[in-house]
Image (tube, rainbow, N blue to C red; front, top):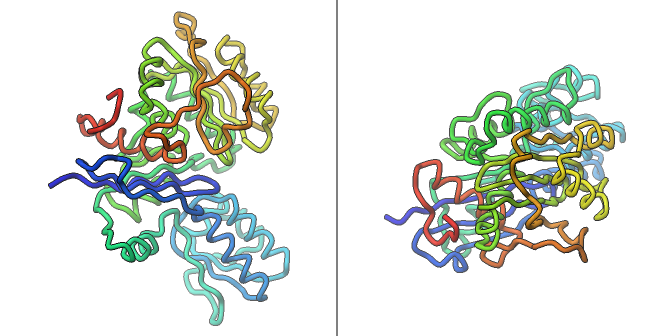
Length: 352
């Protein structure tokens, strides 16, 4: 039977979905760009706030962002929040800090509260939506989430970047950023895999990088060294990459950066002069360049993807659009990674 895989790239604003069916032209595969679960859950909490209802959060650890902001506003309105331990980890890795905020952690909430399910992937909702079009979900999954790792007692920004740096120091092989067996400390990825057993997991940044390489022009240029920048709704990641090895990287928060700042970071990254302190002290995550990067050139092409790519409109950059669909870049990267992790080449993927 032809292989079918559901790829979901979970961002801070959207979840970008591709139902890939082997043998079908990828342009004809089912694709959707929907609000991300953190936005959906945040809206449900805000609705409960407006009604003056206490809420009980159950389910699983998921991405924060919009939903955590809604939780804070709910508490500030003097309304009660109850949560199971797994759901409460969405707010903070340290449950003591969650309780200090005013959240009551319990498996048994009082009666007459609004129950809200927490999880990054609502498979039941997707099944219902697609059933209207006689589309069945496959049994294989590939998912990308932004996972800072369990960082109790540490800065989330600093801890997350430590993981990036260790990855580059271990050789920077892009394939090493795709997991069937998820390593510590990636608790959000593990939560997704509890909901979707056997799923392949990636970070959203690495999925976007791999997806950009599915653009044939990018794949060809990468053989001699290029710079790829993903300007997402919440995070901006720029990498120096040759073939499928990453030699340098910076990560920052998109809302803080304008186009001039992005390009300044890119040029310093290419020159090897961008320091971790410069990025971290400006409220970003950090930067690191492998000493071996000096032996290569990455200035040939600047490739940009992500929903905020037009922040650098007017700059001399290449806007990657694998299969003509930029919003599915991360999903294409997930499918390509799924195949490569099994020692296969994805059909219809240029450059593989």
